[in-house]
Length: 247
Image (tube, rainbow, N blue to C red; front, side):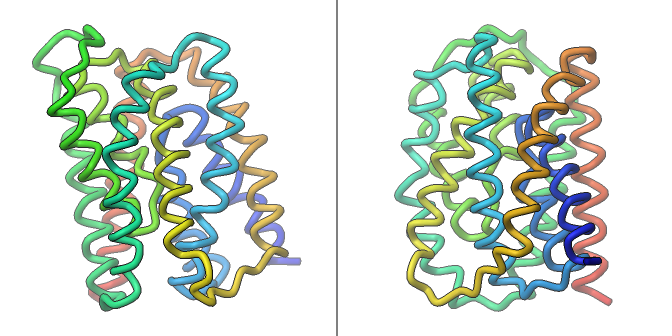
């Protein structure tokens, strides 16, 4: 019963992050599954990809209805990351868990600090294919290696590299997360991971409901406020994971 309650609470938080901020699902789901519920790290990574994929698809539909998804930009960005995501997913099983944890915390922290920096250029929505491809490939590799959907990096990349407005970046990142997560899951298929559906199912259901609430609440906040809230949440998660790995 305790695991069920924890799964429902954690799923709601993950859903709120995905629906309201367009990312942060896996960066929150992995530590929740590992530290709160006690799932082995490798199983937690695969479970988080399943949860985030299903939640992102449902949340993407809502953002698309509001016109906040740049489909061409998102597809270009995500397509460059599919192969790196699959290759990195295959390599992840051969790396020490401590190294993955340090990498996870470091990338989350750097992304958060970047999001806290003021923008140096206005949001125009202009697509630069070369930069989009490079950023998308790097994001795909992180997705496959660390088992994260990539939204916590996709949002700042879409804002900074492609100059999308914050709300449009949030919606577009859900498309990127969905495609990258599916690619990473494909690489992990048949790897013999144990999936605890008694945890995954309620976690996913709560996340989907939370995503709808997150989207509604986000509409009441400015883009800058959303960005700063997400950045501080990421810093907190990065610090926690780093401390756990060290001590």
